[in-house]
Image 1 (cartoon, rainbow, N blue to C red):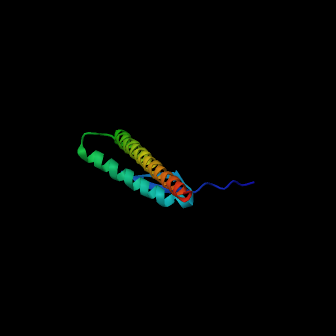
Image 2: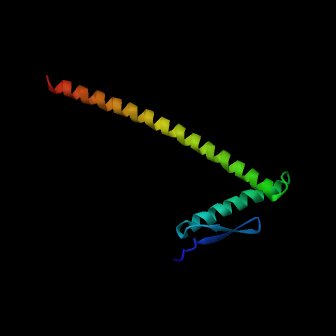
Image 3: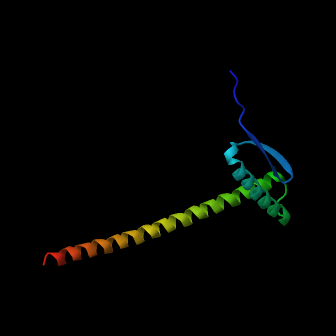
Length: 106
């Protein structure tokens, strides 16, 4: 009864390698995410205002969380606007159908 070991991927962030359990089909996305994180952490480190890998990682995480919340808010606003437009179009269609039914009875 042998258990298959989950696949492991290696990513490098700020010149340090991390081994991460990751399904094969998600490795490309993991690599991309690691590159984004590495870039953001390097940007934060280059400002010289944040010192220490842990603090840099927390600042990067906060930046990504903020961006995620902004994107969700923008998406929600967009969905609301689309729903309003759909309701308006549905109203116009209903009115047009009612008018066409009234016209056909005469």
